[in-house]
Length: 81
Image 1 (cartoon, rainbow, N blue to C red):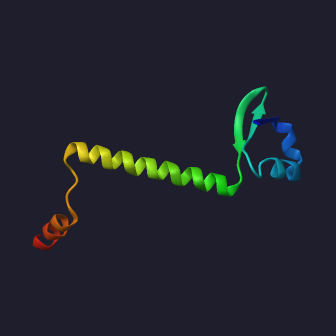
Image 2 (spheres, rainbow, N blue to C red):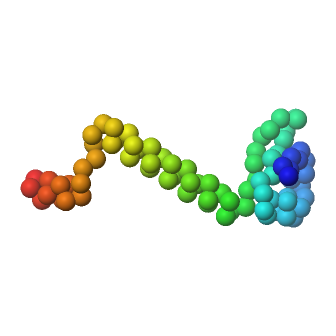
Image 3 (cartoon, rainbow, N blue to C red):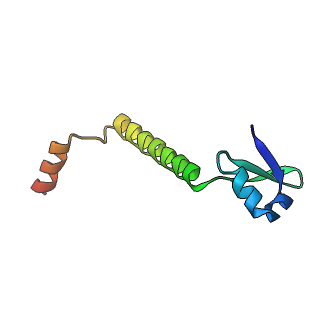
């Protein structure tokens, strides 16, 4: 169940910590979405997933541009220079 609370609820920090233990809490200001409160494990999982996606996208782009090369070719090129 999605939890949406007004920013005034942030005064009760222990309640907010408890609410955000297993799922994100969406915080509103003046009736509009403003912030999301996550526990640190959820934040780190999201951050790692985004990093993986970014690396995959860069790999796909370089693959399409012909920028990737085999490791042994790369090392040979480095040693020859």
